[in-house]
Image 1 (cartoon, rainbow, N blue to C red):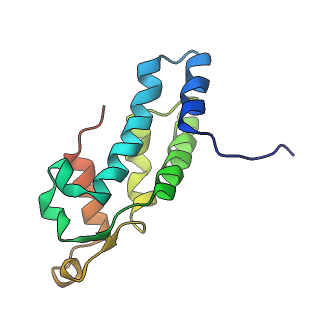
Image 2: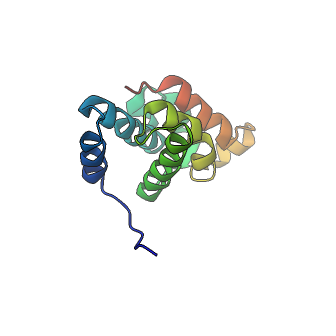
Amino acid sequence: MGESRTWTLGEEVAHSITHGVGLLAALAGLVALVVLTAATRDPKSYKLAELGDFIAWGASPRATLALLAAARAHAFLQGRGYVVPEDVKSVAPDVLRHRVLLTYEAEAENVTSDQVVARILERVEVP
């Protein structure tokens, strides 16, 4: 068996470029990963101030890596060797729902993490 390891973002881009994917296509999926997870940590910076009172802890850096792994798998199942923003958006609810921790205010207003993640996916612009 081969050794398993996690690629850095730079290695992911280099791999995509050397396998015939343009630089912009390779970067777009990776930017989507970073932007979506960053929006869970600082929603006010992404024009989601209404979510600021509902998020106690946003997705961690490890969540970004989990999102990348899931998006890669989704891309593979779609017959691609590179991640595009649609791959990220497709798997984001399943990956992020338990990684976004809500406040007591969210619980009191019956706001779920699925609703928070869905709102982020609706409102945050990705390339």
